[in-house]
Length: 363
Ligand SMILES: [Zn+2]
Ligand SMILES: [Zn+2]
Image (cartoon, rainbow, N blue to C red; front, side):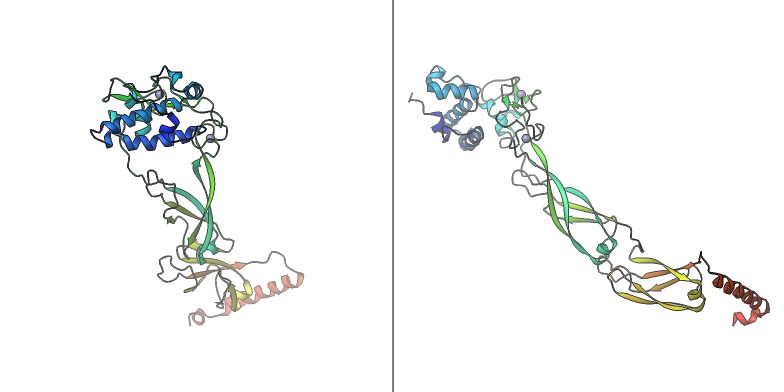
């Protein structure tokens, strides 16, 4: 048997490499030499065993320390972590994503599209009628920056699960073909966080504020939902990102009420203007003005409709109307003279009602 190679050399990492680097290097090499990918190659199998043995030592803090101090001699020459029949079951958790069927434990997962994100965005009536661009704020989960997603307080490492010895699965067989089930203690993670990361409480992820510029088309309404493709959560295993859905909520407006593509404006009209008739000027939501003619004899609640002065259809099919509702204003404070005039007016109007011929009014 040839002399054992240095474990660091086997994995192609430096002696001061971090645990994550070791894991990454091993993953890459084990994938390359995995028996499933090198059917019948004894050489590949030997290399697979070699990298796995190196990983089993260097991935374990105590064993790594012992190896750093004493080299292979620290393990009675043979290396107590490697070379044995447990190698293949050991790597199952690491490669479940790549070799889903191996050991019968988990299903292979191909590229997965990221999850969709939904947010509510309030718009003013002006913004909805004219259309607008807005920075929509959302909070999405991202890998915790402190623990890099493993959930362990920086400076500590998740420990190998005692129940399953770190392989994430409990075996009921031995050798290359084993029957396994997901470890109940670690839910298949193979590792248990003993000192949870303070930043994320051990979750491994945290919420991050993000903003996305969204264009709201003119005419968008309360309850409408916009889809912004690709702005949801990131996909996994090379899958595309999810979508962002923006639910529109409309603020109420102090002057205008929206009814579909129509707008309703309650316009205060004095008794004199309603009786005598008057042309008034109304300012629309876009700042332009329209003349509204209040006919003589306008009654409270009468509606004057202005075509084309409403909300543009969100699908480009024309524009709604503006309905101006006459709201009669009755004065609450009267000067002595105003009171006197009103009393005279009242007498005059009553006399007119008595003397006028109903036939006159019909004409
Ligand atoms: Zn964390
Ligand atoms: Zn476990």
